[in-house]
Every structure is written in C-alpha cells, then in structure tokens.
Image (cartoon, rainbow, N blue to C red; front, side, top):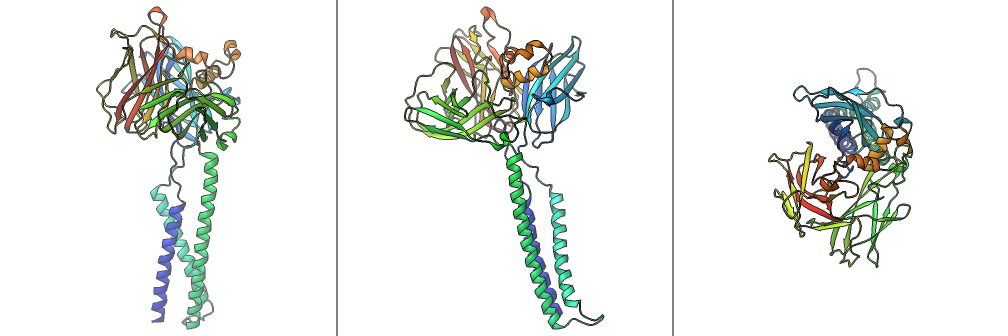
Length: 521
C-alpha cells in the first residue's frame, strides 16, 4: 500500500513538472516580429533600362539576415538571351569588389522572364547589379536593395514538440534518479527500503523538482532577456518620430536616436541626404476616413530636428508618415500619429500639396477616374483582372485636359513624371513610389555611381546627387517639350485588403492628386 501511494505521488509530481516544462518551453519560443520596411511593404520593385533593354525587376527581400533574396526580371526585348545578377554594397570596399555574377534561370514557359536566388549576408544598403545580354550587346543597371532583419523565424512545430519531449524526459529522469538514490542507495541488495528511506526519498524528489522548476524559470528569464537584447540590436525598427504643434501653427518634428543605425556606421550611416531635393517628405492623412491628404516638406533646423509651417488643416486625428534617406542610400519611413485642432496655417506653396476625398469605406469600389475642379481628369487604365497580393502589377494613369484629350502641359513633379502614395485601410501598409518603382532616387543615384565608378563623370558627382537617377527615370518629352500624359508605376501589394492610392502629377505649375480605391485579393 505504501509503495502504491509512493508511485501515485511520483506520477502527480511528474505531471506537475510536465506542465511547468511545457509552459516554460512554449514561453521561450521565438515569435515572428512585425514587418516595418517601407511600412509593411519590404519587397523592391523597379523598372528601368539595362543599357538598351527595358526591364522590370522584383526583389523579394529576406525577412532575416543572412538570408536569401529572390530576384525576378522581366525583359521587354524577346532577343535578350541571358541575365546575370550580383549583390554588393552601394558604398565602401564592398562596392568595389563584387563576387562572380550568377546566371539567372530563364523560364521555360515565358522566355522573357528570368529568376534566381541570392544571399544577402549582412544588413545595410545593398544593390543588385543586373546585366542583360542581347542582340544590341550588353547593358547593365543597378537596383538598390535595403537589407535588414524584420523578425525572427518561428521554431517549427515538429522541432518544438521534440525539444519539449526531451526536456520532460530529462526532468522526470533526474527526479527519479535522485529519489531512487536516496531511497535505495543504502539498502542491501534484495531488501525493501525502509519507511524512513521512502519518506526521505519523497523529500529529495520534492526538493529536486523545486530546484528544476527554479532552473527552468531562471533559464527562461535569461533566454527572454538575451533574445530581447539581441532583437533590439539585430531586428530593424524605424526611428521614433516625435511631433508637437506650436502656438504659431508650426509642426515640430524630431527624429529619435536609433541604435540599429548607430551600431552600423559603415553599412548604414546616420547622416541624411536629399531625395527629390528634400531631406524629408512628410505625409499627413486624416483617419479613419483618409479624406484629407497632405504631402509636405519640412525644413531642417538642426541635426535631426525639423519644422513645417502647416497649411490650413481641419481638426482630426492624423496618421503621419515621414520618408528620409541615409547617406548610404538606406531609406527610413517613420510612423507617428497626432491629434490636431483646426489649424489656420499658411497657404500651400512650392512643392507642397493637398487633396480632399470621400471617406474610404471597408469595401472599395472600382474607382477608375477622377475629375478635378479645373476640368482636368485622371484615368486609371486598368484591365478587368483582379489585383492579387504579392504579384507585380503596372499601375498606369493618364491625365486628360478639359477637352478630353491627353494633357499636353504635363511637367515634372519633384523631378519625376509622377508620385504615388499607397495606403492600406488599416495603415499597416504605406509606400511612396515613383515610375522607377519603390527605390529612392537618392539610393538609385548612389547605385548608378557605383555601377559607373570607373567613369570620370560619375566620380565627379557628389554623393546623394539624384539628378542623374531622375533624368534616367524621366520619359521622353512629348509635343511642346511637355512630358507624356501617361505614367506607370510598378508595384506589388504585400497583402490582401482595401487600399487607397494617391496619384500625383503636375501640369502648368499645378499639382494634381487623384484618389483611387481598390480591393486586393
């Protein structure tokens, strides 16, 4: 009877330890972190020229570094026979000594589509140099790619179950071993343990269980602290953006310190360089309806402090996105929110712009055109096929004059034929893109200099000068020296949902912003 009670007690103790062990292991498993690159849109999309060959490039960046990036290239010329690609840094010694380029695989079903995998071995501002071989010889281009870990890989369920089972086995075995040693260690062979030995064995087993529980709890605490410290150092997070409205209706902005950047002075750098002529592009969107949109350009007052003379604003809660580019070409999109009263403000001037739109509904209609008060009209030239997440799509827009014909007075806006801001209904996705794609023009300029580092003209250009990259992105002028009335943006929506698209073009000195809603499957 006593032995039966002893076995029952041992079973209860084992069950308790199993529960503690499982909870400890489950609590220590790594969890996937949210993605904040370009704000929820980490993949890179680019369209441009590789010498004489028009190409469209998709770079699906890895979520962890080192990691494998997937490169997809579509060529417009069916005569292109080979595509080579090689990853290297934009700046520094790593930009001067590229490894041997990889030959991308040509699709058997689509001979104009090439793909391949490439390792990005460390964080920082990378570029993928692409060379196309075809009937007109070789042509090359370079696509900037910011590389940063966005989270941790979760442990597979099978491996987690195996580790839990092994830990339970070890814990139970240790308890039994210590208990048996105290109960039977001094007993002659063939003799049963005395009641005193049994009681002491139970006490030893209880003490062993308590020690093991404390050891597991301490190990779990140590693991959490170590993983948290490593995450802060390794996983990318955009700097904090602090906002405050002053009595004179100016908005003060401060870019917070960011250890992720400061710990990588060679690969990322912290200094800011202009992109499209400005150190910061600021976007204010009134929520939840997204019925007010402002594209502003604060001026730098000192270091990482900026100020903006706000235009007239209605009261409301505003989602704020701020784009900057580091001197290495690495972009940051900072996110914040602010409640604003009615602001009298100053009239918009220069390159600042605003628009008013109907509130966004949870189910977006198939909006395909918008007519403006001056009689101009913007048309989304879309086909009937649905928009699908993580699939490259060319978003094409045409600006028409009051006569219904393509506008003949289109001008560059911030050095580009157009700009687009893409926002998901829950604001978990934000992307500021151009006809070249999702890359910043400052980074594209640096990559162009790296690609042509042997040329005197490239060497003479100052770092961060995006004039060449912008000129590369500009389409051929139309009649009378104006730009074509149609602009195309390459993009891939990162996840299903309802999106609002703000499309900006300029004509006769006036900035026009079209607003379009869409559902992505």
